[in-house]
Image 1 (cartoon, chains in turn red, blue):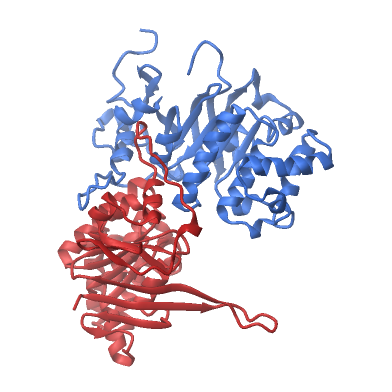
Image 2 (image 1 turned 120 degrees about the vertical axis):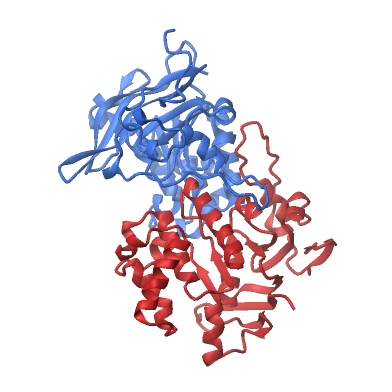
Length: 292
Length: 330
């Protein structure tokens, strides 16, 4: 069994109840299945509303899925409760998109980084202090700055604090939800490199959520393209980027601006009505599936 | 592009400051750029570089504590800085139009989009109210809004982000301006919609003979959309060149670093980075603002502000190390 195995995941949200009407149901995640091997960087790609963030939150049980299965390290993650759930949650952590809104501005960096340890009642006060300094060094921050508040750090440094917090409990899986899209270009590269270094040093597995295809192509070994709650195509990054099989993937790839004035990209137009969302994924090549 | 005729827009030594705590912090610093007839100048920079404030300064829309401290903005033979406010109002929207990043907040939620396009025409006296209504529908058609007559009656919240941006472009071209300033017009949009809007802007440019100042942080969009490019860092233009020269032979280490930090699909390769981050306005270093992050910096870079030096045809750079080359007038 894979390190992380998501099977037929469905998440429905109910809207407001109308007059004499049943509340409308939105399927944010619609029969999503994929598996991630240990040490892999798995990319979930899609535009806004594609369901990529909801999928990630279901895996972490930050929202409860409507149906489906999530197997994490051989355990049925959706069946866990109580202390077993708390233990599993230590092992899977999330890094959020916008470090300026995901860090409490009234907390010192030290409190933010130590908080997971406090919640899970790990270590003495002195040990937690030591661990915070160690985490700061790990993400390339100066432990002397632990007493500062988030607004005294730059955007890139704030994202490093978010990462230090996520690493505090020594997780094996990190879900990174658009971890660099709020950062400046020259700072994005620093954070991406840090994520990749940490993966090697700490043997982490990532689910990497992004809308920036250039970044996904760079960072991920395998990728799934989502659209309106469904995976339309998945496979090895190189294969999928070189020979996309689904018309939506082709349109998406052709829309990415290329930083080369002589590239004359032929944009492949695309009509949402052309996509048959009922088609199942089928193998089109070795480790490459598409809903065509 | 730059030929014998004077440029359409000629910004000369513009400085815009923020008056904070008794200090005047230069957010736009001694900036000179020109947009020629029919040309698109790309202005690229990271957040806080001063690129949006440059756009607002050109249109004299800077709000306190911001203040235009020095410089001239020549547009069709007039210095906009010396115009009376009433004259300036006739320029805004009619001769120079502005398209902003966030299509959600740029539209008024309580008026129909058709009404808002019509208002641009009536305010500038280009049409009667009835005429303006018809023109609004026609303009929506020209920016490829399907079923324009119906959409004209819609309110902004009924439209998608891409449709709202089309409405804003229709408003921008309504009075047939000669210059369009587009400030990150696609940054809030999904990549497929972004590509459609970029294509639309290109068509509008040809159809209306627009000249453009195109502001973006995305080098990919700048590459595909500009004739010339100006790179901004900490309030200054550090390099300015024709698009090909800038992408092929960047001279300023900051330009080179920006280009190198874009992932280009080499799976698993480390990205080249520059250490540190953009300096805060109240903490600008002496000398070249990029020197503390620069791999090539010399001691004098930390004390002297580099002048703008010509290094090739229409290619200027502000760098003490990489600014060597044929100088102006040599």
